[in-house]
Image (cartoon, rainbow, N blue to C red):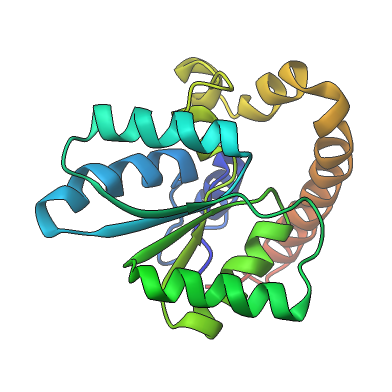
Length: 195
């Protein structure tokens, strides 16, 4: 399942009158909301991604903010592709911890592929949450609410981390605008776009 993390997707959905209409569901907010509500249901969490330092801060922050939350494992995989054997050992470690959710913070697009693979391999729900680990650990500042409301969160992130994000936002935003334009023109000429 793909959720519309970006505000522009919800705007395109509204303009094209999609049914059902897509509304923004930010990964960082989903992450914290599930930690909060999950305490009432004994939801068991596994955190996969980021660095060991960020994971320690994240675990501490989540435990303080959401007392009683169950974090059954944390893991910072190497910044390279895992071998087949390493992947099998990692998957077994995760399965043995018996989480209900594997939160994957490995960066886009790697985390999306890995979340899908993990769900197939382990049968456990895996959710890719982008920068949620860094935000919740206090390592990276989130955009002010007004910027998020005005679809400018990407600009805030780009200015905060230009060397790391310039390619993603330059090429990604151009591609998004091209796709949105095709959808709009198809809609205007009677194609009505996807429903």
